[in-house]
Amino acid sequence: MMLSLPALPLSAFVFTVILLAPLSEEIVFRGVLLNIFITRNPWTGYVGAVLISAVFAMMHTQYHHLTTYLELFGVALLLNLARLRSGGLLLPVLLHAEASVIALLLNL
Image (cartoon, rainbow, N blue to C red; front, side, top):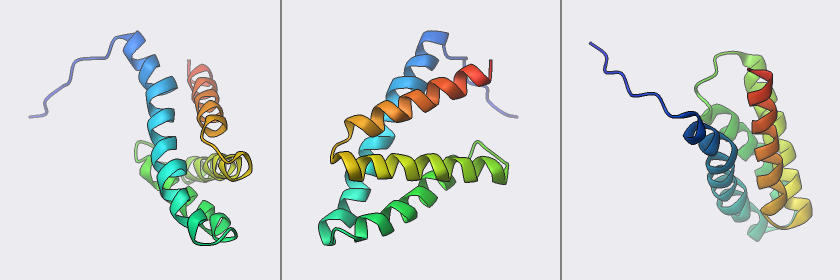
């Protein structure tokens, strides 16, 4: 017997997908993990970007198609490069939120 969880109100779902998830994921992946690679050597940031992109894609277990994982890897790689080029988290957070909005609109 499976327990069912109550459905989230639309506003809570939108808040989570567009604001909370991008902010928290960017802090963890681009803020903490990528920063570990950057502080070792400048060039190791690019190695870290590839590794972290793979982990980021695999973390999204709600998807079941290889093409989706490849797309997530590509988006994550762009977010990592945005972090490396800008030196901060604002650009990756905004790009991640924008990608989430586009994904929501495409799935309506």
